[in-house]
Image 1 (tube, rainbow, N blue to C red):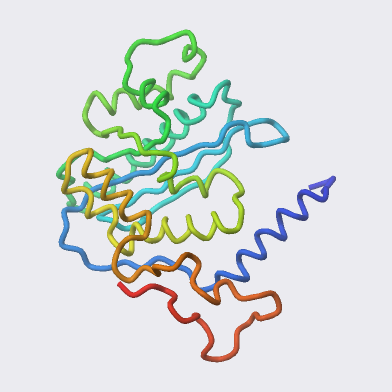
Image 2 (cartoon, helix red, strand yellow):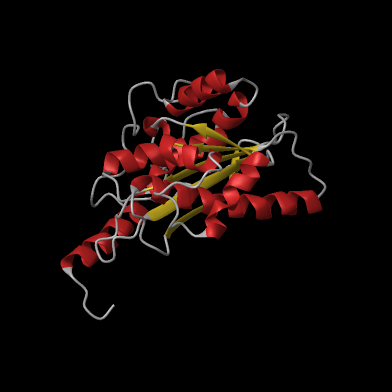
Amino acid sequence: MHAPRTSHLQAVERILRYLKTAPGQGLVYKISSSTPTLVVYSDADYAGSLDDRRSTSGFCIYFGGHLVTWRSKKQEVVARFSAEAEYRSMTSVVSELTWLECLLADLGVKLPSPAILLCDSQAAIHIAKNPVFHERTKHIEVDYHFIREKVQMKKIELKHVPGTEQVVDILTKALPNTDLLILTDKILDLGIMGGVKDGLDHQDKGFLSNMAHGLTGQHSGYPQHGYPPQGYPPAPGAYPPAPGAYPPQGYPPQG
């Protein structure tokens, strides 16, 4: 960068603070007897880049209730409205899903049902389901509309998820420290605690209900007196912790 500014330094410091206070976080994969199903969260901010006003896409893909792939990337063109940004994000994740389904097929894994794609934009879902071009979508490149074919072929199933339950928000924008910690726990919790796989045995209403149940932390072993648990993250100057002091008491929650 030829002309760094204070905002860029603050962004780097923010990243370093996160890396310093969360060295032990990671993915845990457990054996599951549930039917393997693909569940995807897709989200996008709108014109979040101050330099070129491009939006940022983010997605997480869960297989059998476990996080297997994720991405956060600035979109290649400027979106003219928020639903377009969400739609472009959905399209990028469908491309990833297509590759993942081919990989699973090569490994002999048969998916019993279409992949479930969760998005918090009703307008973007409507664009993906509606085969008729409208004035507001004519400018979107033709290759982005292949998501409609996937819907018509029943390769994917689109569902709306409330914005308060959209865990991928963490991949589209900078968040306050408290929100960052909560969403980090949620995005890992879906895989570790089985919030996704438990919900797949129900219809839409039950599915979203169980998903919300898993996201609010109302399950056994989750701290009942707020997040983060006492002593986490460590206070400034307290890192690295003394031998035996990390992880703090009560973290991670017991399954």
